[in-house]
Image: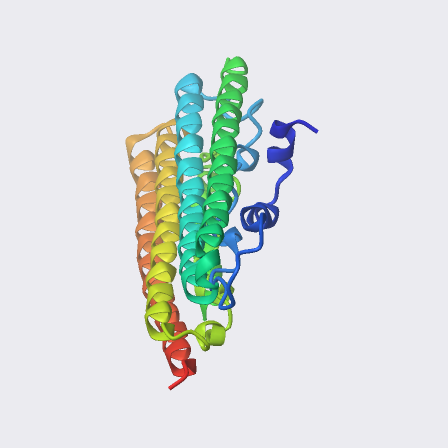
Length: 148
Length: 147
């Protein structure tokens, strides 16, 4: 399965699991934020009306298609920004956990693991953003092609 | 309480999206799913309040969690605010196309405007309620800290 297809198939719950994946974060008090899925569904394009018929009967069809494409991107950016914030918060708690619960000699390794997890999460979010922008543009193009 | 409030918001959103149905033509807004911004019920997804009980920094960690909880609520409610405004914008444009007389167009736009105002009032209330829920979690967390 390609990365693009993988991203399209991800549910928010799976995304949350991916963000939490990686080396176990050492320590004991854990992360109070348990569910990244509170941030919603990033692939906004899948929640839009069918582009083949969306504005086909409107005299302002091209403009409405373009407006929808813009709204799709804007909402997607907001949702992914929430995931990014969630990821940073999770890492902040993990870092404090490293400092508090891990033997001093292992603090550096623990924090390095947290940093790697956070970077991995950000890379995943960036890839989702790229794909989602393409999806919004694809929706817009299909919508335009079906204008009268 | 939270679920009920979000349910009422969903109903209000449906009313907004139904403005075009009242106009009698194609859907005005292309946004079909009004739950894409997630759930502002952030405190409901937090770990148990005893999560920091064994930490010597328990109280500040509880406070930090409350702060982050509110920040997430703010983001999520802000996303819904954008969603509703976008939907209303499409509905208003649709009013102009769906009706032929200025009076009908004005009436249609008034309905959309009123629906949006009700939604704004609704999500302001939701944000306040969710902030209170974050603080309640924080109080429980602080209480669970070792003396």
